[in-house]
Each structure stands twice: as C-alpha cells, then as structure tokens.
Image 1 (cartoon, protein in one colour):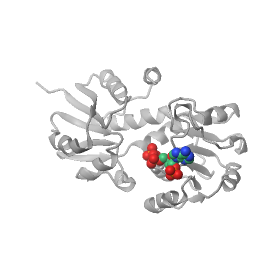
Image 2 (tube, rainbow, N blue to C red):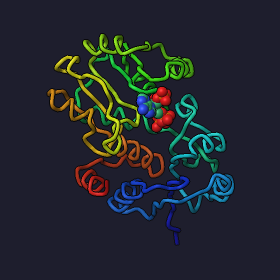
Image 3 (cartoon, helix red, strand yellow):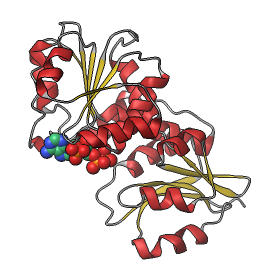
Length: 276
Ligand code: ATR
C-alpha cells in the first residue's frame, strides 16, 4: 500500500501559517494522498530535520522566517532563479536530492495579471522597498519585460546592493522629490515593504500624483485593503492586493510537488480570507 505523503511549512517560531489551509484545500480537491502540516523547527535542529527527510515519505516543504537563507545554503541543488535570488521558499526532490525553488516572483506576477491589465512594459514602474520580497519582484518584473524600473528605499545602499546582486539596470530614486517626479508618469507602483501591515504605519506616498490609469499593488494582505490600497481605490486607480501573491506562489509550489498547477478560485480565496 502506498504511504500518505507529507509536506510541511517550517519556521521558528511557526506563526499561524495559511499554507496548510491552502495546500490541503488543493490536496482534497484533487483527491491526492498527502497531508500538509506546519512544523516548528528550531535553528539548531534544522540540519537534523533536513537529514531525516526521506523522499518516499515527504514530498518537500516550504520555508518561513528565519530559515530561508539557512535552507538555501543547506540544500545540494537549486533552480537557476533561486540561485540568482539567493533565497528559496520551496523544497522538493530531484533524483533523490533536495532541490530549492523560489516561487515568490511568479506569485506576484501571476496575480498582477489576474487583477490588472499590466502589459505596458514601456511605462515606468516603481518598486518601494529593497528587501527579500523586492528582490523576487524586481527579478520577475525585469523578466516580464519592464523596461524602466525605479527603486525607492529608505536605505539607499540596500537598493544599490539589490541592483548589483541581480545585475539589473534600474534607477534608484534617492529622495521624495525624485519619487514624486517619477510618480507623475509611472504606470505601476508596488509596495514590497511590510508598511501597512495590521493597519500600522501606512506607506506615505501621494498617489494623486500618478496618472489616472495607474496600477497600485501591495504585498501586504493583513488587512486585505491596506492604507495604500484604500488611497488608490479612493482615487479610482486599479488595485492589486497581496493575498493573490500568497495563493499563486503556493500554486507554483504545489505544481512542483504534484505536477498539477491548481486553480486559485474564489472558494479558496474566501477560505483564506475568513482565516485572516
Ligand atoms: P522582506 O524579506 O519581507 O522583504 P526585509 O528584508 O526586512 O523583509 O525588507 C523590508 C523592507 O521594508 C526594506 O526595504 C525596508 O527598508 P530598509 O532597507 O531601509 O530597512 C522596508 N521597511 C521596513 N520598515 C520600514 C519603515 N518603517 N519605513 C520605510 N521602509 C521600511
């Protein structure tokens, strides 16, 4: 008899993760013999956890804070994109060896296409932030053909390092005057920082400077309508919330494990929304 396959999301401490809800929804929908659970793994136990995994019992795992870099360093094989980004969120098996992927950029871009008609690769886009999420999103937008990318970050050297690490030609906005000038002709603004999470410290950007056709995207999904998205909505701009990125990065991970790209449907979205 075939054994039920395990999947995990690991972290320390493991906060309330929505990944089990999302993946178990698809596992059930597709009638698969698998179960996805969250697992608390202390940093000192990470190596033991990785070495105990067996490919006939476990299909792989997702990683949250603080293990993203440590797991990246510990697995023997990495996808080209994960390697370039220096970070991974999904681990699977290839030829009996652990293999690292990064599905965050895919998740962001796929969701952007779901909720907007962004195809204007010649219009400037502004990425706010230069952390791990910005890294994956910058690469995804560059790969999607965006020709004029601007980065705005509180700590300018961090933005410079981001561009140097990824070897992407983009521009850095060094002060709010430069940001405001750029907003006037930008087609897309993306918040990749945690500002606005739990309704605290909203992003302080004047969206009324943007063209009326502009799109505003946020990766924060608690609350679903951040202060930034509320401002955009009030101005009649197109908004893209952060929940879809979470769902689509999970869909890509599911495809890596099961070979099925599952649908991000309204039922799933409502299920996760009711858990936020
Ligand atoms: P993640 O991996 O989730 O992207 P991170 O690497 O800690 O998290 O990056 C957080 C991003 O949010 C950074 O761009 C950070 O700006 P700095 O590089 O200047 O630290 C940005 N950020 C966090 N808190 C901020 C704040 N209060 N004001 C402005 N930017 C902030």
